[in-house]
Amino acid sequence: MTILKTDVAIIGGGAAGFFAAINSAELNPALTIIIIEKGKNVLNKVKISGGGRCNVTHAEFEPKELSKNYPRGHKELLGPFHQFMTGDMMSWLEEKGVSLKIESDNRVFPTSDSSQTVIDCFQREVDTYGIEVKTQTGIEEINPIDNQDYFWELKSSKVIIHTKQLIIASGSSPKMWKLIQALGHKIVDPVPSLFTFNITDPRIEGLSGISVNAEVEVFTTKDRGVTKQRLKTLHSSGPLLITHWGMSGPCILKLSSRGARIFNELSHQFQLKVNWLPDHNIESLKSYFEDLKTSHPKQLVYSAAIESLPKRLWKSLLKYIDIDKDLNWSDINKAQLQNLAEVVCESELHVNGKSTFKDEFVTAGGVDLKEIDFKTFRSKLHDHLFFAGEVLNIDAVTGGFNFQSAWTSAYICSQEVSRSF
Image (cartoon, rainbow, N blue to C red; front, side, top):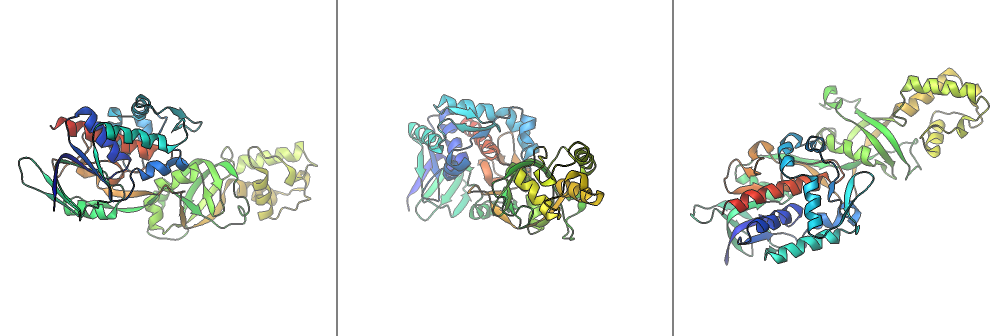
């Protein structure tokens, strides 16, 4: 079998792999670089991100604030973000001809609204530097070799590659994690992250498409080995989207990311408490309703406009607690007011499973962060081995943050790799 020899081999033809290759070549154009991808196509996640528009990063320009969006990796990424941040990535893309825009929620997209713009940019850079891309090449073995010139041997059914520096940017690949384990690294067991909640409940039935700013918290009435102390950390706020299958939107997706491991322990079965009017609690809302009794005594409760609460949701909550459609504010009694305040501020719903958020499946798990030097993203176990992107036990909430950790880790890898020659 043919043996290919190269300065830098990168396993994984995704965002981190391409970015590491391009920056390594840009810093040291004399390097020979090979990207190895097991699939037929490269940059698949870039293509589908943001509904095909590619949410390249997030307009958060303070490293400390940015790191808070990473349930796993927030401490470790703080230093790297001081080296390469969101603004650096935006500048890099703009310099390569990719015009960007910041949307109202601070997500950053190409002005073309097409992920192909980013893919074309990366492909141009790869072609410019003569970086070889080998697709449909699955690596079956990774072996250290004792050689003065080359330190790693990569075996596939098609080719053997000897390389001086190895960057693994293979994403959430169980097969690659096994090969990494064989090199002595610990792999934190992967669990799903960034998912929506399956909920069947009359309060939200038939309300698909309604979005409301809400506050949610998690609790469970069954002892599944998850302490109440751990559950206290699971709360979120922001836009909540009611769907055909339950709940989604930034509020839920942030929560699913932060609680990925706990939700997995609970088999994605738990209770969710929703406050549909986060500016109120039960007592303040009761007081608000008492004012309505005085100021609008003859108004029907069903026809009331309750601050930012969508009218269809309001009517559904009233129906759930058996408020008569002909009841006006003057005739509502204390027990009904109490029930109404509770259903608005503390609706308890049962979550019965999860669904993948669009096609953007994210995994919590990967190479144990204790075994990585975050000044270089080099393995602490092997001098000539680096990791970038989702292969590490790093993941983030939705909004371009997962891509940013890929860009940052890949960029810092490339700095170190290019300096080693």
